[in-house]
Image (cartoon, rainbow, N blue to C red):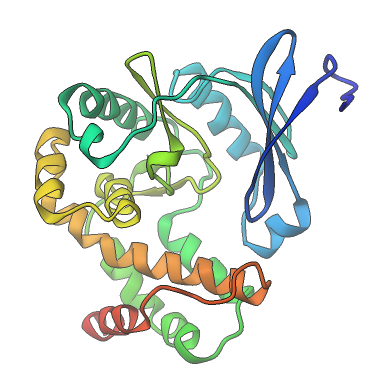
Length: 264
């Protein structure tokens, strides 16, 4: 049992998801099923994340706009959302009209949110400079920041992006789509979130074209940001290797090297 002075008693169930810098639990609060997410400040700092007041505003705003499940409680170390039963989404299901149309509405709603002091996509990349050993491919990446910024800025960087869209961060509840896990929000172009989705879910070229058409986001823009997804994933995994959370970085170095050579 967990007691929080500003809230009613929370009873946690034997269910948890362990993230790189947080743990999530299924819980009960005021007789409602909820998801309790607790952050570890030391781990947050090691991964260059900053859950400032601006991030809290984004989380609150997303709940108010029904982009996320209803927010029950929030502070700098804890987020509690109402638990919603989820119908798991597969690639095949996602491409069906109903789900994709609802996804489009939620995405557009999120992209129209206030940006505040949210980090840019480029700022997220260079933030790894201070927390990773400056050698090998890391040094090559950090020596090419000017080219990376120019590449990113090809399209206007003016929309709030989720930053980590994949099917486990998308809730399908009663014919409506919600986003969860806003830990990687950033400011970028419309195509970036879709690039991250197709990168993480390994969506085929044919399916990408279909998604682009239905979402009315230029295909060229979506594909433009796929190399950036590889780059961010490489930096993310490299930090996990350093902290011994994982044994090996699985992103192909050759893909990153070819990208850097092409923008030099």
